[in-house]
Image 1: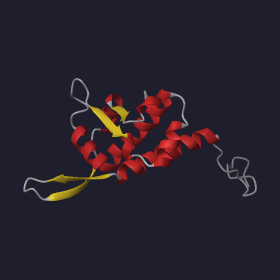
Image 2: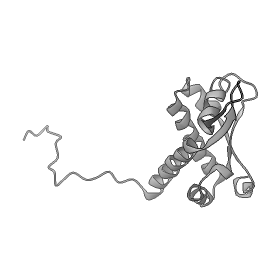
Image 3: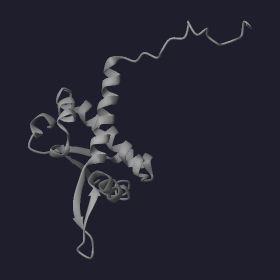
Length: 140
């Protein structure tokens, strides 16, 4: 083995360790993203035919072209009634409103990215995510 080698012996390699709190936040973002992606609603097309759409992906497609240019910026509204109890419980445990908003913001940005809405960068800077519903007391 050369003195310039950067290879580690298998016994010397250590798994990446992140703080538990960082893993927890990533899990909340992922769970919220999956939750939002799974919410469906019914709508009628031009002919009156009832169709089922994915609510929050549709919202990404509708708002994606307006967020970078509209004044005032349209808000991306998440209804608390659409969230699973596990996701609601995880969000309720976060006592800092700004951190809750940041996690919701990150989940929605990932949803924009998943549906392929461009330009992703300009949306991220102007995106306003609001959690609304009956349980709004802890999200104020």
